Length: 439
Image (cartoon, rainbow, N blue to C red):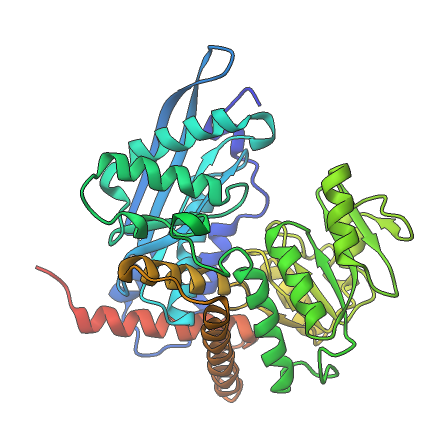
């Protein structure tokens, strides 16, 4: 792309910041003990950084890129959140995602606050050396605004373990003589990364869904065994999630990527799908499957729908077409508020993003701990610990929802999303009050 300015990214789909703010307001209304001053403090980010920086491209030209880093809250600990590279990154989006990370970390009970970052760029139009220079310059410009006990980045959209290796190395070069491994998570295994981190978000979606179903939280769906699952996406989260659902006994009937999707009533061979995508760059066209659009995939006849791609995929224009009993938010914000309301009216259960995809930050925390202790845990230990965290969070949210359902005070639906945010806000508010105001 030729324009890397914020104005070129204004058209980011739904107004995620307004959505997140509205969700917070509704949750705060359900917590009578919250005072107005504390509500205002929890609503706004602690720190926002907007940067522009030059990068020399392969053709010798110099381009200016725009990047953001936001820390929403540090009551529980250092900021924690991903770095995304995308043409549509905006400050409002990053603030919203940092806020969601605050609630997510509180809900899953890890000692981090919420943060997020991003650079406006099109990774598909850049080669590895250009991405490396963009990453290194961005981290250099952030300086001491990130750090092992200040703000800890991680992979996100169109960034990966190689990106995190550059983040670590850049920071370490500028901060010699100390253990810098905990400055970033999602690193390669041989550079201090944790076993299980790359699959953690997808695996966690399955752990959460399985627990919810087992506890009777999805009417008409007694088990994942034999359940038909459609997954929007086939990136890291979606791929790992699909394999995890399949291992739990479900049948994966549809997956997709940015070019479209495929459907097979008898269930997809995920190894064949992955091999075909590696060879052809898309899942579309796999033999013995039916091609469909991403919009069609959302309306697939299935028991469980996992939107694991972009925000705003299920909205007032298509929510009535959703046929799944359970929607598991593998992505951040894939269901809009209007979509939520329509799904709730039809009895479709939504497992919200701050719970469903919290496995990633959970294992990021484990990586951070391992780096601080100079240890490496076995994969089985990592997954066992993460599963226990996810199950406890589901138990807590389901119990809180049932308490909300008995309260006549608020008219709006008391769904799992509202219960999850209420739990998270209560925890952050409690810690904030205990810490007090300084000086």
